[in-house]
Amino acid sequence: MNNDIYIYVLTALLPLSAVMLVVQVNPYHALVVQGILGAVAALVYAVLGAADVALTQALMGTLLAITLYAIAVRSSLVLRLGILEDGLIKTATDSDFEQLIDDFRTIVRKHYMRLELVPYTNEQALHRALMDKEVHATCTQKLGEEPHEKQLYQTEIRVRRIYEIMQSELSSPATLLSYVQTPDLQEKH
Image 1 (cartoon, rainbow, N blue to C red):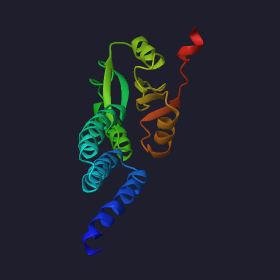
Image 2: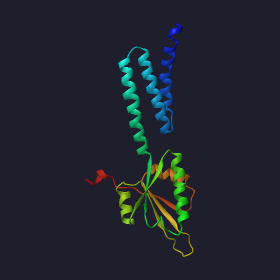
Image 3: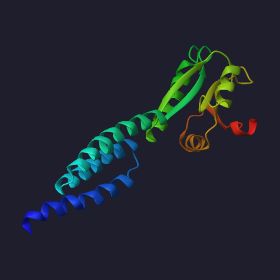
Image 4: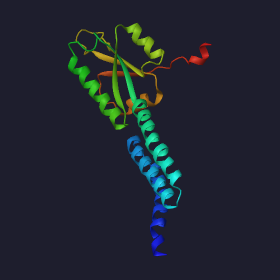
């Protein structure tokens, strides 16, 4: 009986690691736990005498799955922000824009995302990119009506959840946030 105790311990690790995987919030931590779960499953199969299943689990269920999940997580957690390449990057209020972008980066990092700036040549191309779902949001300069008014930025966001996050967490008065509904591609047909 004492010789089989390690089998019970290994078998108990399988549901424990599965529960750890389900409760993970950070997708990168979930990838690590997924790898541990696959390794424990392969080890259980090997100890119980199913070497072929253990090898298949190790190669396909752990190595390949983790690689594909890592690629999917890395590519899907991006906030693409469309900007005007001349209008925002080279303005006199460059420090205001840089501060706004730093605020955006801080907020998206909290949600395990990254910010990607996508430059466009004019406002029409920028608006079209938002409507065609090439970018998740746009940020354009909005001039004050009075000469002494500070220049502001208009940020339009097409993803409801990102808009809600920005609305609740963005404390910068340098931008006006608005939610924009894009036409559904299926409705055009």
